[in-house]
Length: 224
Image (cartoon, rainbow, N blue to C red; front, side):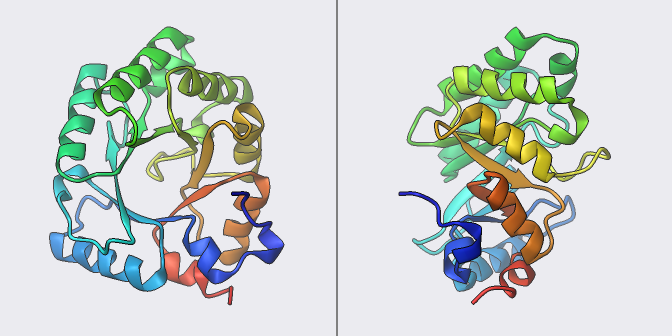
């Protein structure tokens, strides 16, 4: 099914593209449970929370995503794979893993592909695997290389950002480049710093098929 064009997106349609997110280190279990309840009220596709918060009670209509190797990505591949497996056993439907940014920047694409493949092997389909490339810290060539490695390794999505890197979060330019690289073969998740309806729609216009939002309610207020 094709994604509606941004100009014609309804509030409900945009909500179904949202991973309603709470990844602050100080977030409590009560806050995570409140997030899950709000996700159901807003019609969000999923919640995205820290792995230590799993399992979490959600509406049957809401998926559960969690992060892996977060936020630095500077973890051994086998540690990321183990973390992903534990999270799925604890109820996660989707895994958002962070690649080792330094290894990619220094040109070790074999490592990038291998670590993604290790997580994919630990949590095979139907688990959804998203690969966070931290696009704001990369140049255009590196963004393309990261996306290509994710596709070769069997990922389902490429994702812009953790939202924790000092270089920044999602940009329209990065999303457009990522979408052009993976085509319709993989999804593209824009995440990090998307706080307004206009910003969210711009990401969709650029090719995002999923949005990571912490301020979901405010973003959806601009639509009917």
